[in-house]
Amino acid sequence: MTTSDRIAYDACPLCASTDFSALRKGDGSRHPLYLQATAGGGKLSPLIRWCTCRACGHVFTDGYFTDAAFARLAGFVNPGQIVGADFERQRPIAARMIEKVLPLAADGIWLDVGFGNGALLMTAREYGFEAVGCDLRPAAVTALQNAGIEAHLSDIAALRLPRPCRVISMADVLEHLPYPKTGLQAAHERLEDGGILLLSMPNSDAPAWQLLDRQNANPY
Image (cartoon, rainbow, N blue to C red):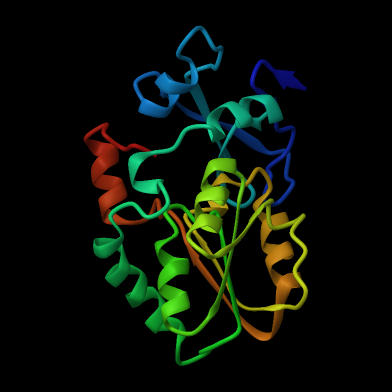
């Protein structure tokens, strides 16, 4: 079923169980990207309804954005996600991530999915990797291409590359995919044998998360 700007889930998007229930509601009406996306009368619900799966514990919104709603949101970006933003400060952060990978992989294609400000890819290229990015934000893809890095306007499931990747990174991306298992399967299919998958995502078990919850200040 479709509800205005979201397509409702009829089962858990991770394990496909139909045993899930409402968890809480969130209000995104003050978020800068919501304000930009709705400026001039654009319609986009600020209400976020979170659910939890009793079978696997996965937490997810009650639906995922329609193509039209996502396209509206993809036209805007947080300042820190603009390609090249604050690169000198982001570069050593990216380097620490890359150095965790180096004992396992030191060359080949490094594909960054949802590459944000591009710092990880630009730094990976300095380390000798063949940097490739894919993203669903047209302006970001163009900006990365203008920086001399191969970039594709595509999700990972539709991406076609001439050979498998040595490293695929999905930094704070997996939790945004309507069906995360599909994203993981696509990454596996695009890795060479012995390739490395680098993931990061919010952790609701972390003390920082729980502290923000108690303060009713959790931005997630």
